[in-house]
Amino acid sequence: MKHAFIDRYSHLQSPVHRLDARLKFILALLAIAVLVSEPPGKLMPFAFYGAIVLVVLILSRLPVRFFLKRLLILAPFFGMAALFYPLSYWLAGTGLGEDGMQKAVLVALSIFFKALLSVSFLILLISTVKFHDLLAGLRKLRMPKLIGILSALMYRYIFIFWDETLRTNMARNSRTPGNLKMNRFTVYGNQMAMIFLRSWERAHMVYNAMLSRGFDGEFLSFGQKETKRKDIVFGAVFVLLLAAIRVFGGL
Image 1 (cartoon, rainbow, N blue to C red):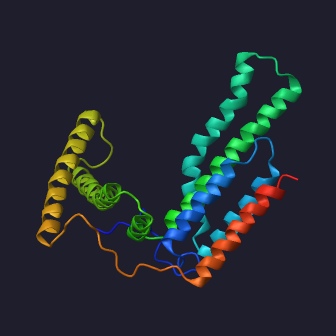
Image 2 (cartoon, rainbow, N blue to C red; image 1 turned 90 degrees about the horizontal axis):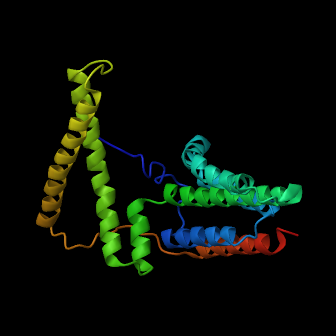
Image 3 (spheres, helix red, strand yellow; image 1 turned 120 degrees about the vertical axis):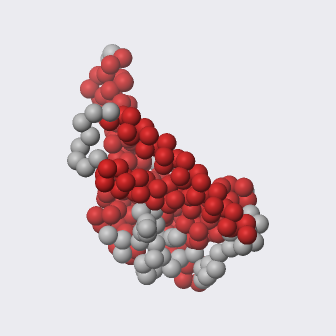
C-alpha cells in the first residue's frame, strides 16, 4: 500500500521546491521569530505577512484547498487560545472598561494572527521539501545525530503503523459489515491491540533488514540540493521584506 499523507506535494517542481532545505528551514524560523516579536495590539503588519504567505503559496504551486485544509485543522486550537484572553478579563471582573476591553480584543487578535501565520509558514516548509531532504539539511546545520536518527525512524515506521491500520480495518469490515451495534469498545480495543502488535513485529523485521544491508545509524541522502546564487537572492529578498514589515509595518 502506498501512502503520501505527510509530504504529498514535495515532489512538485516550483521555485520554492528547488530551494535548499537548509535555507527554507532558516527562513521559516526567522519568519516565525519576527512574527512573535510583533508588539501586541497592531494588526496592520499581519496583512503584509499574510501577503508574503500568499506569494510563497502561489510560487510553490501547492493546491490552495490542501493548504487551507491543513490550516483549518489547527485553527480551532489557537482560536480558542485567543478567545480566552479577553474572556479571562471579563470573567475575572477586573473592570477594564470599554477601552481596556478593546485593547484586550486587539491583543487576542494579535495572538490569533501570529499563530495562524506561523503555522502557515510551517505548512509551506514541510509541504515543499521531502522529509529525508529536510533531515539531511538539518544534519548539515549540526542537529544532534540522535534526534535525526529517531526522526527518520519515526517517519518510516509511521507508514507501517498506518498500513496495519488499513489492513485491520479491512479485515474487521469483512467480518462485521455495517455499523457495530454491540461490544463496540471491545472490538475497537482488540483492533488497536492487534495494530500495535503487528506494527511492532513488522518494525522489527524492517530494522533487521536494514541491519543486514549495512545500516550503521546514518541515513544517506542522495541528490541533496546545494545552496545556489538564486537561493541566496531569494533568501535576501525574503529577509529584507520581513525587516521592512517589522520596522515600518506598524507606522
